[in-house]
Length: 110
Image 1 (cartoon, rainbow, N blue to C red):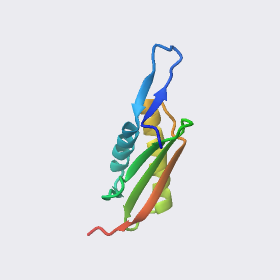
Image 2: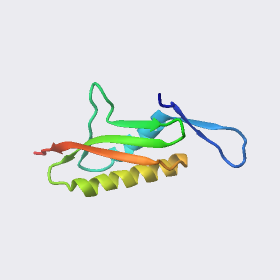
Image 3: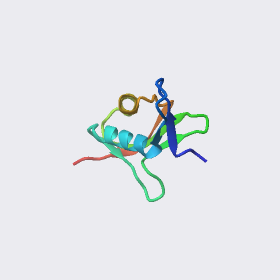
């Protein structure tokens, strides 16, 4: 079973800081929502963004999305990966080990 909290230790050792995995999910969600033409796919069975913290301390982010029709899936997926990595690094000072983007389809816009 995955851990719920990610422990961060700083050099000053004043104390431990624990960040809940939902914090990483919200950072990723807000970051993806800022990209025009990208839609997070939440279902009744699964959240569209899921953070997994393994027992050995690795952070993995899974993102399920649809793009507006005509968008370049490969380029947009790389943009999502880069923006999520940058946002988490900036806000929590943690570098995710992996950001997986699953493109579930395209959305036709009128």
